[in-house]
Length: 422
Image (cartoon, rainbow, N blue to C red; front, side, top):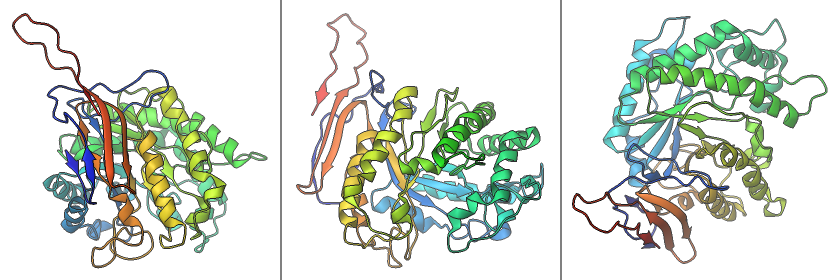
């Protein structure tokens, strides 16, 4: 299915081939994300977040309107933030009310044909540090200090108490079991929901730096020695109840600095590499600097893992804070072209109605340059995609693919050769 929200000439052929596609896996190719019918998918969408409400009012800021408006502008995917501290407020006690609230949101998604990635979100670990995510009862600091930095929230990840809390989450066997069990509960509840595409076990995982260890070295060690076994533990628990959902694994946010991940193999047949695409200068409200070649460096780094392990890529978050600066039009055009080269799609930060990171304003109109994310794309292709690109200058979208082979007829005949679309 092809949805467009910009005036465009679309050049496609044979999109309705009747049999399953085969994702390309040879050489350095990054395989496509596929559906149950084997079709190559393209996901385009936004994060849906309600960090302000918890308990009885959890998820109340997300409404049916969000899905209706997103789909009307051509987006087919949402990354829905859910919080462990709301799901399991006390050890072993899971909130049925919260599960029902998640289910209600998923029902809206299904109504508008939007696929959902369930993201167990954390910012600065969780409520013990004034944020959301890992419950306070699962937070162990060994008495180390924590100093809030309200004007620089990311720097709080480097507070000693926060760093030690990550170490305990990764290393303490009872917390390992609790985290994996929480995911088993979620997957078991929503495994058959038509809107659920898969599961993102933890948002932007961080960890504890060792003495005299630089950030890039620490990130690769944490990814290799702590995140890789964590993802394997969680995958095992999800697979105990759900054989079909995709598992979206994230590196540390340090990948945004153009640092290749140290993640190892996740022993599961349906893994998606799900990095985030943020630049420190733009995160602080600065403009895009093309001469710094940040996009090129990021793309070179972020494609190493999926090429080595033959897994598809979905970028889970991206988008600058200030979209109206002079170079932002160029940024969005270059970012969209880059994302299309190596990923099966993305979910931007975030679909909300206002300022800052919001995709649209209070009236539902795109904010400055955000309309450049609403370009034509082929949602599902029954074949192997060789190239897909949209030229905003000419308004032309081109899709080139090898159509899936048709099933052999019952009576003897010559074999049918796969068609080629261009």
